[in-house]
Structures are given as C-alpha cells and as structure tokens.
Image 1 (cartoon, rainbow, N blue to C red):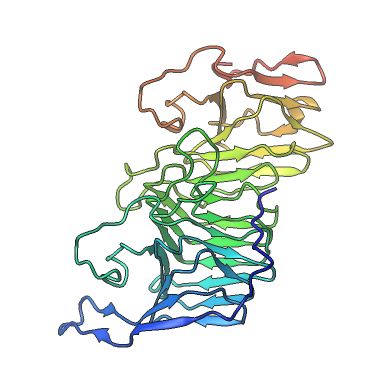
Image 2 (cartoon, one colour; image 1 turned 60 degrees about the vertical axis):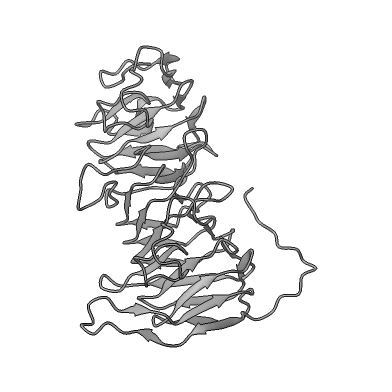
Length: 361
C-alpha cells in the first residue's frame, strides 16, 4: 500500500509564513505585472488555512504536510523550492484548489519565471525543467478538489508522479499537466497518477502534453473521452509515452467503462480477469494495447467486453504505432510482430479469441 507516515515524535506546529517582500514590481503599462509578495512556507499546516491570489507561496518545508483544510484561491501561484519539493496530505488533510479559466492556480518550479516572475532572483541564469520538484501526494485522504489548475515541471518523487491521487472522492477537472515526469518506461505511473484512486474519483477535461508518461489509472476506475493528450496550440506536441497506463492491481469485478479515443489504454498483466460478473464497456474507437506477456481472460466469454467488436475498437501490441500512435516511446525503433502478447482467452469455451480486430498476439 502506498502510504507516507510522518515521524510521530515530531512536534506539529501551525504553518509559519515568512513574508519576503510585500510590494509589487510595477510595470508602467501594466502589461506584465509581477507579484513579489513572496510567502515562504516553512512548517506544516495544522489549522484551516486560505492561500490568497496576491501572493506566491514557496514551499520550503521538507516534507510539507497539510493536516487540515487548505483552500487555494483562483489565481494563486505555488512554487516548490529545492528544499521543499513535496506537498503531502496528513491525517484530515484536504486541498480545495478551484481556479477559473481566466485565473488558474499554478503549481510549478521555483525556477519558473513565467509564473509570477523571477521568484528565485537569479535573472535568467536558470530555467525550469522536468523533475524540478516532487509531487502533491493525497496520501489516502479523501475529498480534495483541483479545478482549473496547472502542474508544471514536477515528478521528482518516489513514483515519478506530480499529482498522486491516492484516495477517493477526489476531483481533477480542467487541469493542465505539462513538462512533468511519470515513469520513463520501466515503471507504470503517470504525471497524474490514479493507480490507487477510488472508483468515485473524477478525472475529466484535463490536458496532458510534454510529459514523459501522462496518466495512470486502475481497473476500478472508469474514464470518459473528455481528456486530451496534446498541446491544444500544437497538435503534434504530445507525451513521450502517449497513452493511459492501467495498473492492474485487481481483477475487473465491477462495471468498468473506458471511453478515451485519442490515445490507447495500455495493459501490463499476465493474467487480467473479468471476474464475478465484472464487465468492461468500450466506446467506439477505443484501442487496448498490451505489453509483452500480457493476457486478458474473460470469465464469461465475449459477453464480458461490451462492444468488443465496435467500430474502430482494436486489441493490439504495445509496439503497434499504427493504432493511436507511439505508445512505447521509441519512435519507429521497434515494430509489432506475432506473439508480442498472449491474447484474449475465453474461459467459457476454453479457447483463445480469434476476433478480426485482435493483432499480434
């Protein structure tokens, strides 16, 4: 189980906010106003707290625990200092971060001058990059909300995630994830990691581009077709491993529904079952790709995959770039071939399925 437990012998104190400067840098034309009201966060948050849009909050506490309700106003900028790379929910912690179209909430690197100006005071000497900071880890706490938020340059964490949705009743909606990590191919976690998220989580209308691995989910979690996996201003700017990576912690025992059509769902499990009446409903144009050695077992036969033969539905190899693009992140270095994965097994009839839309098994 993913969990981070804080040293219980530490004395927890109310968050200490040290004001670095209380003035604004004036732009005579008001074209590029820069906020220089910088608030260094150096201790854990234990009281109900609001962060305000007229300040930049710099996380310096290592690690910074939120142990009560933190409300972040629309337009607020949160930067992560190298000394404080993570924000972790402790017992009773909740983050309510609701931005707007015009005033998103930004979580980014200490080096990111494009958000609120030159916070680290080095002019143009440094630039932000992937893994400049760690992650926001919900740590098995429920009820947080991130709406119209932006997450940039994160992923220097144990699971390479930038927002780790470990809990239930979490909402991530209309958010942007760009220039974050996610595993580099050896693991399975995305910049937005919902592999330990509960079935009542909402992941909708988000945008992913220029991440290593954008999104990971589990087999309890349904997903619609509202998220996009490219830069809206440049359709060719996608993610290195451009897909939704399914962490098969459990068998499919509920009524799972996958609707995403821009990128494939990627399975890595040598024995993934639909079990005890579980079903998987696929929308038209949905593609499932399988890593080497992976197999899908249908306990009740073909009826367990609703719309398995729908228009544009395919089951294919992880190396098959002709279906929804380059998901294994190697350009054209590899090509698919027969035997790349195990196939789909009909447990009622005791045979491997031979549907026309199954390739390279």
